[in-house]
Image (cartoon, chains in turn yellow, red):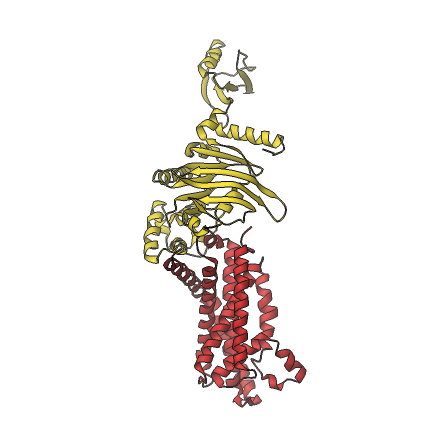
Length: 311
Length: 257
């Protein structure tokens, strides 16, 4: 399998002098479902903006399915579909016109474009709205419209910049299902998101970027293995006065009926429950304090910040 | 992109542009029709009847070519500047930037859209003028060539304005403070032969004077300036503006970070 995206020593310094990218390297394999994570201002959108030709790079190389954007930009763009973070369509145009016009920009004749537009608008539940001006759509529908527009020319690589930001849970889940199906059919997907649960649920590989440098670029499974401590919240059947103390585990009282329990890698929960049982403490429910990836992400970004963002 | 694909992309841009200005026809096609009718009534009929003849023509017949040209210039310019700047403002320009459409096709599409509106408005005004005077084309080739090249030139001008503009005020400055004075002083309402030597010399530096006169020559067969020189100057300006536009697009001026 070839590389869907290959980035080599990519740098970007804006006119203001701000160095957004400090020479990043990144490879996304064909067929992958890949997440690019990072805090605000880390360089995610700049990286994707360069790949999509919305931002001029300062130096470095970018290849999309082997097409060098410096030598064969047209070839690279033919393989790319882009769903941006912000709404970027003409609010006064009809839904169907927006999608068909986008196909025209890729050289697809109107007749074929209409067939493709119908297919994706139906898949994304927008066919009934096809003759409405885009401004009449709800926020979630506008996001789906941008996905339909990005797919109308059947790209091999789909880039989504925070596709589910501000979308309700039900719609987010349906978009996950749709994207997983697209990926199963062979479309390589790269997304940025602030919902780390989303990255953990969808993506096989993850890169974490901060201060213009890649901190981690590995599989989701290997990344989660780096999580040394996981914190659980336990809801207690009866209130307690103080956090129970027992060997090897650290506990803290959140309130008199809720306990925080740290479990290190290699420890098992049964042992912790055994200690609690010995002390006559009954647990009625439990959940992780934060998403596992979120804990890891926060730790890495904090460590990088403490190191002066020099990673 | 294959040549067929480029042609499809070009026609897509043109169709979208035509659809845009026809959808909002009360803002784009109706106002010049109303304004020019008022010009014909007030300057042509009411005042013109007292002026008598200009360069051997009835005053109404004399001003009609200039007024047609004025509407073509302002409509061509306005179409491209407002459409392209709106796309920048709404960020829908990104639809084009992420696509494989070459820059020269983007430029050609917008210019063709500007010409479609400019020439469409010119045709509407011409038809209206027939209610006030008899128009016979003295030189059809020169007439069509001049109006088409002028429309192209001002579409290119509108494109540059839109690329440079950062706010809506910026797209009204040039039409208000540059185009309108140059058009009014470009011999639409008078022959520069009426001016004192000094002001006649100043007028000769106004590029719109050459366009109005070349167009007037095509319709009436009279001109204050050499028609060959006029057409050559228009072509020269077109070439310069095309080079400028393509350089700005390649650098992503105002559209890429």
